[in-house]
Length: 304
Image 1 (cartoon, rainbow, N blue to C red):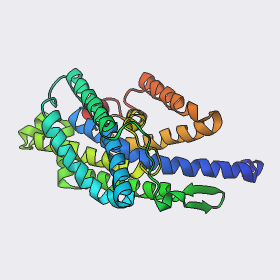
Image 2: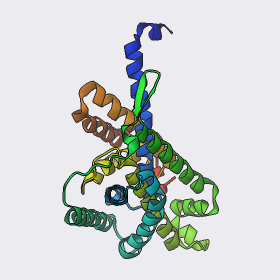
Image 3: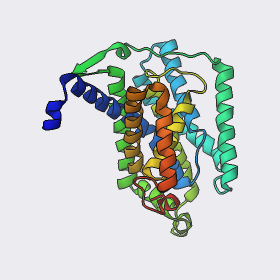
Image 4: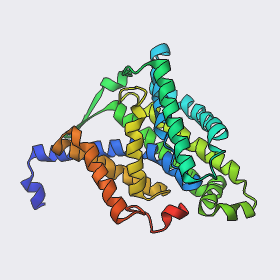
């Protein structure tokens, strides 16, 4: 109470605005990171092309809006099955051949895929920055001492709903239990009659569907260009390491931490410092707690 009395209305308003911005941003980051941590936790593959699938989702929203005036949040219902199919095709053509290869081969393969997708986008759509501006992007909602964009709120609510649905699917469905069993011990899962190739195929498709949906959600909030996914995938790596490799709940918590560092750091030191701050946190976690802030030691090898 004494601290609250010492804070003036302006300071309380600033804190409230920072808190709201952190939550809204963290919910969107969680959907991006959950797809990445799902793929790593079950397949043991770090997908360096994750951001490029997000970029493709942004372009899908942009072209649907530009050509047919379809709202990005309507496009979302189409994007999920589209990117699920893209994930299935990518797994069959690219990932299946390297799933049991060395980590070096997996890294070079996904980095090559990332570069290829970036350059295809550059050739098809040039390097121009493109903006998606549906009607709700100009609507400002004011509540108490805070103000936020309607597009942010809608993107946050949908991202949280999709993230919770994915978590519930993994936790309480038979397929989810099969996927978790494969993550814990692939060899034992095979001996129990589980088709691990089918599990990996489904895992990759779900992860790509999640990040494709995230791309559609962020399209009204960020500029669309061929390397747009790079900033998000770097941030997703930080989130995944903070939360514990392969830990979906940790990824959600890590998203809030990274969002808080970004929002508060931008306010105190300027926007240019936000990436410096969360990468310093990233390095500190790797140095002192490699399993992540919320992961138990050894979880990075068990996918727990």
